[in-house]
Image (cartoon, rainbow, N blue to C red; front, top):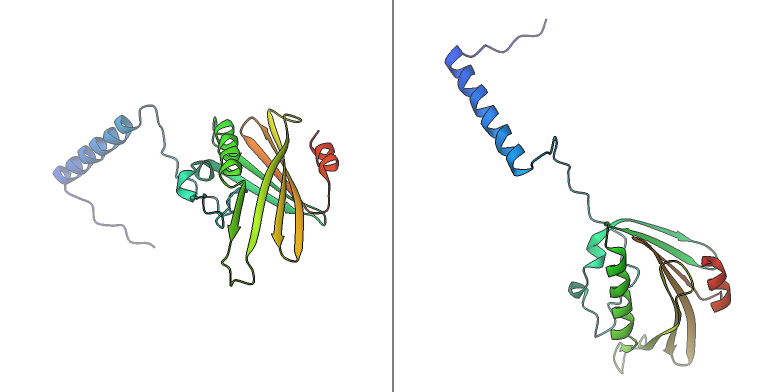
Length: 181
């Protein structure tokens, strides 16, 4: 049979009960109407779809959108990668504006130095807008690493607080537009 802990003398029990009541009242006054305090969600581990650390003009600290993501889903297919980011309520429009800002500030950049065999030049061009969802962009990205040049496309579609980015080197602009309409 389990042992019961010794009971406290009546004056101590009264003091403990009073302290518990004071502490609980303090919690409720700090959070009026809150019956329980929800634990903070852990940060999303997946990188932001528009993080461009090789671009000299990109500073992660300048963008708040990545920290406002509630959920990220990434799916890779043979011909494309899809990243769906769900933002805190009201953050979708602001996050889309930050994506436009990244594309403006990193429209052209060089990564690596003269003696770096992996050095390249990168260019991002917005070639179409407004074809799907609340807001949308079609982005052409060209990476020049002599003697090779790679062209890729990305489509970015915002619907409310969800932003989907689809990247591909296999599909062209019309095929991407068709995927999101």
